[in-house]
Image 1 (cartoon, helix red, strand yellow):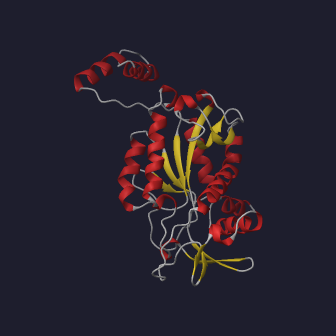
Image 2 (cartoon, one colour):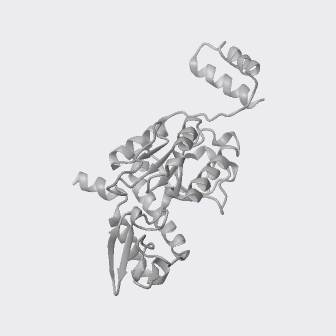
Image 3 (tube, helix red, strand yellow):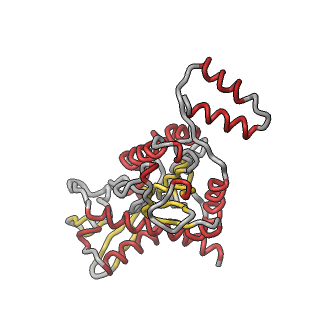
Amino acid sequence: MIEIYYEMKLWSSKTEIRFFNEALKNFASPEQIFYKLNSGYFAYVPKNIGGERQTLQSRNSLIGQFTEKWAKDVFNPIAKKLGLYSVNGVVCEEIGLTKRSNADLAFCTTNSINQDPNNIKLIFEIKMSIVSNYQFKHPDKVFYIGDYKTHKGNPSLLRSDSMLKAIGKSINIRVSGAESAKIPIVILGNSPIQSGYKQKVDFLKTTGVIQGFWSLNPTPTESEHIRKTSKNGFETIENFEYLSNLTSHLIKQDFNYFSSMISKPKLGELIRISNQETEDIAKAEKFLKMLRQL
C-alpha cells in the first residue's frame, strides 16, 4: 500500500489523462485542450504529421491551475510533518512576490496568501505541463500514444522560455532585499532539461540563487534522457520518500544567500576581521553583516 501511495503521489501519464478527463467533464471543450488536426484530436502534433502548424494557448491556464493544485496536494503531507502550511499564490511585496507575480507554491508558518518574509520557509516556482502525447476520441476516450520524443512540442523544463522565466523570477526574489536571503527557491517541473542547461542549473545551485530544479516525473520516457546533472542542480525525483527527505533537508538548513563583486584586498580584509570571532557561526554572521554594509 505504501509503494502505491508513493507512486501515485508523483507525476505520470495517469496524472495527465486525469487532467484531460476532469477538464472535459467539467469545463473544457476538446478544442480548448487538444490540437484539432485532420487526423483527429491530439495533445501535441505528432512528429509523423507534417504541414499542420498551430499554437494551442487555451490549455496553458487550465494546466497551470491543475499543476499548482496538484503540487500543493503532493507537498501537503510534507509541510504538515514540518509544522508548516503548503500555500498556493503567496504574495509578499517585500521580496518581489506581487499579486501578478506571486509564488506558485510556498511553505509558510501561516495558512494565508499574504505573507511576511519571515513566515516564508520555502518557495516553489512551478513549470509543469502535459509531457506525453495523447489522442482524444469522442465521446470520452483519451489514449496515450507516445512520450515527449514522439511529438513536436517542448513541454515543461524542456522549454527555454520556461527555464528563463523561472531563473528571472528567482533572481528578482534574490535581489529584492535581505529578507529573501534565508528562503530556499526550487523550480518544479515534470520533464528533463535540455543539455544546454546542464552547466547553468549547476552554477545557479552552487552560487545559491536557486536550490534546485526538480522533475517530479520519474519516467518521462523509457529512452535515454538527462536524469540529473553532476552537481544536482537538476535532478529527477524517484519517489515520494526521497522528495520528502530532500524538502525537509532544505527547510532545516540555516541558509544565507550572499553575492558581491569586490576586490581581493577588500575581501581579504572582511575575512581577516570576521576571523577574529571565536565561533564559526559568529564568524559567518560577522562576514555577512560587513558584506551587506558595503
